Length: 464
Ligand code: BG6
Image 1 (tube, rainbow, N blue to C red):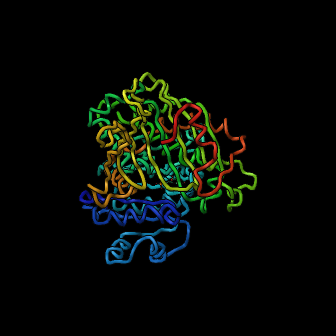
Image 2 (cartoon, protein in one colour):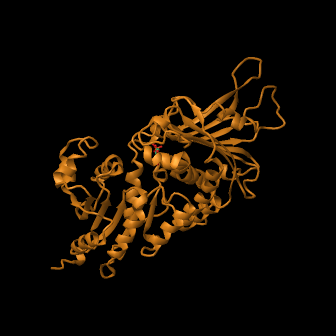
Image 3 (cartoon, protein in one colour):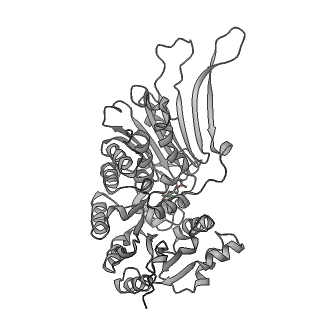
């Protein structure tokens, strides 16, 4: 019997494909659990977990006992989850599921927490099972969420987009980059466009160079096979780093909407020019599980880029990212031009504005100030510091924020297909340049290859 009921039109089925995988285990389910109290509409929110394993509901839920602490709330949360064994590459199985779900005529969010290599088959099967079509009569919606990497080069990304857009409209597609859910990254919009002071000097007239670092202190862990096929360039640079760069350097959008913001970000991604790079690999990488013994894959990369625009001519961008370094830190430094001519006898250090993304969240402005004294006039670096921890408590995790965005249909923090394509255009060019190069080997827990400093110093500049 069809139980379609207009009163249920706001109910949402969050369908997680790949619910027994690592992402679901470490990120998605803990985020959903944390959101449990926030859902004013939680009564109408159902979590449908799809996996290939034959598990009972309680066997499935017990998998989260290490990532979700026991409590009464946890039991209530587990009650919201329905585990269904399903081969989601088979349209017949999906069709059966769709028919069952349609009995309550809910909106649907299809979350693909799957290895990207099977995206195409699964999306095709979802479309064939008509999962892409919302129920117009009851104004429900259907959205699809995809994890990065979206394709593994420009060609495959275009192909994948074609498959998706053969059934879904762009408005329904949520391409996740979890960096866009980080508070300090979202704050760059307000820093730049709510405060006039910096926006007026946001160009190569005043800014000498921009630096982005995504440093990690862990290795490839149990992802040897994925990592060896992709490397730092695809894993972090193509998405997280280029997204941060585009937000930092984009022109002011006409309005604070997904349409204008993504247009301006894309305008930057189109104009990025590859200048040079340095490739490294941590000692011992080739002994990791599922890694080729002769692998040339980069676990570290430094890249120099230019932006081909009037605003940014002569402001190079320096980027470094790598695994198994001596610290975990993500930050963006905007290095201002030096004060010339210098009125003071000492060396004139540049002012630096730092966006601290993690582990500390905040903004620092490095200035020069007078050292208090009776007669000498000496200068020293001083820091003006804003730390989130002094103002805000209990920030939501990236996945919590992005899931809410998706439920609300807000695409500002999700990437559009042309952004992805332009990022791949650049990455393909870099990949072509580096793929045959032998990586420079660096020690674990070091600062990366020894030439990393020379990479920037040859331009008479320094890592901040
Ligand atoms: C993921 C990469 O996208 O980002 C991982 O696949 C990386 O390799 C991770 O470790 C870093 O994310 P965060 O939020 O810890 O900086």
